[in-house]
Length: 130
Ligand code: C2G
Image (cartoon, rainbow, N blue to C red):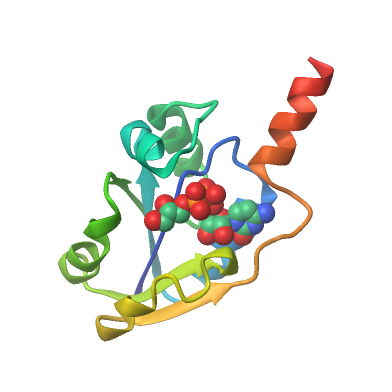
């Protein structure tokens, strides 16, 4: 079984996230998502609308996602890749080259981001209208 892994916050989940997850899943047979915990989001400097449990529940409803694990540090990726016997690590290309050190452990693929949509943009829209 060819396992793929990706990581993210997935706050106010939108079709940009969905297209990433779909394309990531198509690179193998099984997709693991390392979902940033609320605590790790603080480390990343991200404030979330939705707490981890809600973001996890939404991801569980997406057919491309097979397993969700908590992401609570920058350093866990190598262990995750080894422990879950991952073949492919995938991130959007806003992270291009940032995770090339993982090439020692698995294939590293950066997929194009969906340009016109972002959680920040959604927050701006929500902020303006409601
Ligand atoms: N993404 C995308 N298109 C968008 C927005 C996001 O393809 N319009 C992708 C990102 O490139 C990323 C994934 O969706 O691969 C999740 O995005 P975020 O939740 O913003 O993830 P991020 O905060 O970048 O966390 O250790 C890695 C970090 O946890 C990544």
